[in-house]
Image (cartoon, rainbow, N blue to C red):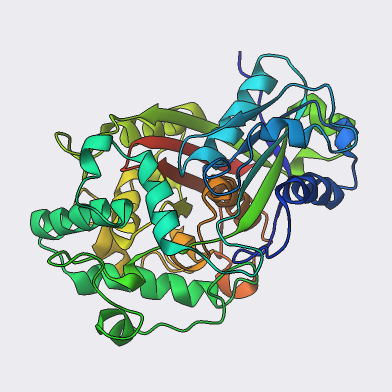
Length: 402
């Protein structure tokens, strides 16, 4: 019998640039600052997991679990590092849940981070493009300068052709998310305004990423530094922390599945693993997509905002972009999607992204997001976090604890 798992605390840095913070400092801050949200000490935590994707390639740091164990009170505990590309944060949450379900403890912390810029906040675009390409199949890298934008430009072209949609309709996803980010103090692009005309105009920063394919700069997520952490607990864990259930959100359902890494030869517009993971989460939570009115989906590119809307079941196959065009994803819409600003405008610190999705949805359910972004009657939330070319999928369903 699975034990109910609750979110006891969530905390994140502002997304964007972490400047001179070292990796040990980032991990220490994530743990201590999240514990301080509920006025507890790291020593009260029984288990932990940490997710990151570029720790070796950009940070020259392995064994992140050992850095977490250096936080006073965390030594000698079951801690592991997980990597699942851009789903590393979601995987860290699943890892902690599994530890708690196995009886390794009653309280756990999942941390995700990424430091993709140098200590002056600058980025090496070619290096980042190269290392992110490691998360693709080697046969799909040749001839691609920036592997992932190229792969998703192909997905975007296929989506437009298959569903008879347009670049303009997909651009409206980015415009909506930039608008949301304006009210989110944690968002990387908080101070940037984006109109539909700007998103569609080629020139300046906005250009086609790959010649002959529809993906433009404003269709892309950000290169981002940031960290996020979430404290999870069983019912007994909440009692130990002195936190009443009614002040918490329950992770009522969760699922994880992996499609083949190679994009060619499979239906990426209807990714089997993604739908399987989401459906598993719904079944566990004993709810259906119609019950969901809060969501955060993995919009690494605008086309994934559309596909993600279909995966969580709020739009029929091929109608994901239209859901946004019709205003249904707005904070006051039938399902408020990516009110955080999403990866496109809030930012995409790879290892932190999946943790931040769940944490933001928890804040939505508890009425803790800025008023301009708060859904009027939050009930059930869904998250969809992916890694690679729609390869790794981690999904959750959240509801207020009773």
